[in-house]
Image (tube, rainbow, N blue to C red; front, top):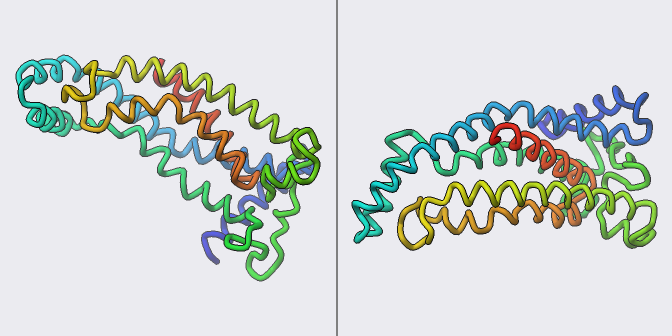
Length: 247
């Protein structure tokens, strides 16, 4: 049995367990529960990333000292900053690991509920993929926002489901934007990216990072609803988790 088949059976079993509570939306509830389980598994890495950020904060005085010592040689300063991170065993990008480890689960959901020709998963182990018939309220889990607009418009039964998801994502993204803006401002070692005072390339990342949460709106609009549920649930988990770990 393939990994894809095992994953499909897991979602089906979770949906069967939740059916008495959620009825027709049991598969949607199963996806939310599955997402929570994935995030629980990677939570130790999230805690490690939080510790890494605190360790980077403790390096600021040393980096400031290096900046004063190598003010006339930006390249040498950049090398010295990277060597300091390596010596202290602090990775400037350690926070990316939890997100990367979640990508396989997202793509499995995308494939499992996709109805496109290229990624179609209409059969599982030679039988029909019954998960494609499941819904979140009026919206099919295998459908996309474009299907909802074509089937009833922006305020149609399926369109209202997406409207609710967009509203939820906007609230979460706004919260993340404000929090990330404060964190990146506090993490900025130098006022300008060109002075070499921070890890090479990190200045540009810090400028874009506060806006990344709003990209979730695009993801929700273009992927199957099941994959969108995964993204929204994971984003909400991240917002709460980071508020606790980085307070």
